[in-house]
Length: 624
Image (cartoon, rainbow, N blue to C red; front, side, top):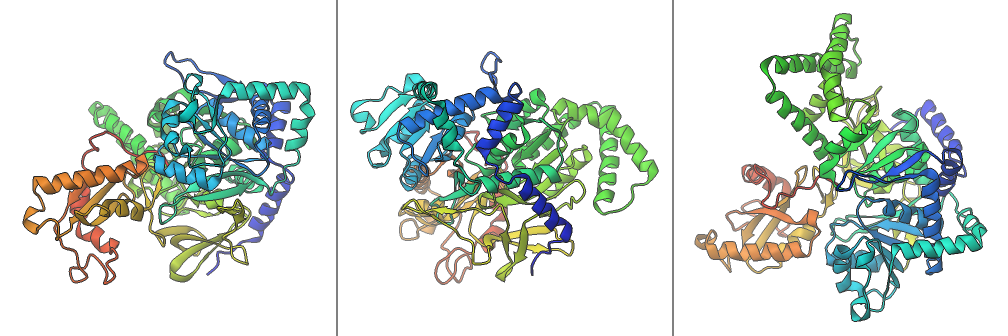
């Protein structure tokens, strides 16, 4: 079955392609610096004193040019990869834009990666230059530096941390970020035309960046996107989910995630937005109160926390205030559900909604910093219908989207005019969907990736001869073209924070310990990863399964596994369940593969109990 593409959508897609014809991210950055140079482009998070720093579009381009020329002086060539590992700070945006202008391929590595995982992406990318934030990042990179022959330079933002010499440097040159800017500034003073000539050679079909995304085996894949991919995504999403000109936005996800790269790195240049940085996702609620953004993309955990916060305030309010909120919420939700069903909202109900919003809901949204939001979207993982309904009743019509790194972000969206709860919307103009064998969703269109980076530096496209991408998600298309995701063909956990995790990787590390017979990683639609453990009967008898000795052995196995995993993959809690598991008991197949659905149903109560209280370290994954 193929999703239909009506004539209006096809015409709109052609119009969007015309609008971005010949454009690249650097060409739009130049436009912004020339036409809107004094406007704020990006503002840092408040420091300990509450102070912030802001770069205008002119200053952002100047710093990007300096860094770009500094990178070229260090030997960064067109097509080279440059890896960055740092939090959301001004230098990160400058470094990324700088690498783009040098015609290299910038890539951000997740700050949560273990040293072993850093070694994989560093070796696979063959990056000659990496940019690190400071001592914490250096310490995790040092053990693998000797095994990276392609790496020549390590640029460090926190200058006090960059003094690494002798054996500790493993033959790599460590130099401060400011020195790279100074080198570039000198080159620009001598011959500014070289910078302009270089970036003007960039074509829309050239790479703009790369993201490492989780594979089903745990080895990340380098997804290479083009300028055309990300600018088409930006112009289409902006057009179909209208938002004011020069909007304020909040960047709280890492730039290793496609949503943040698309919205605050590429989309912000297209829209000339003012990006406010929030390095810690747990502080996004406070950032909302400062910024009052025009739009907000949130992984489900962010929206769940917002909803829970409001519900907590209502629960603790005076009876009269609580009753007023509940009444206002009920009438607003009733009207929203009528509109979603395509039905007329009665005049009396419409008046009640207007009064409820003016007196109760609008002040509540203002308190939260959501009063200017005209585009509220959720993606990266499924969100509960209960959360959606609560937010709709608050006057925040949250719209789900669906996509992945390979589709440059959202491939389908719900919109204010077509927001069907429980679905992830319709394909954006220019994108087609079809349902293949076993219900797998296939997609094609201008936002499909250029390909995956190969070990030899080439880029191999996964698209078939007709341009279709097999997404690995299972879903259905209804008669109106709305997509519903029902399952995943590939074995991946997607946490409620939107992080894709390969359970087989976690399980293989756990079962490497002789005490563990089977391990099942749990975490789909949950805030963190837990595990069910079945002991090896040859090591511990059934009677000894819950002994102190068995518990200590599993503790050691979990600690050893966690040391090899990124922070978001680490097992926060585990439960030892009775064994053995055999094909006869039903938890495993004759080949001893896990029957995940059976296990999830059989141990539902045990699993739920592991999520009744937060983990001991207080961590839960709330960013993708």
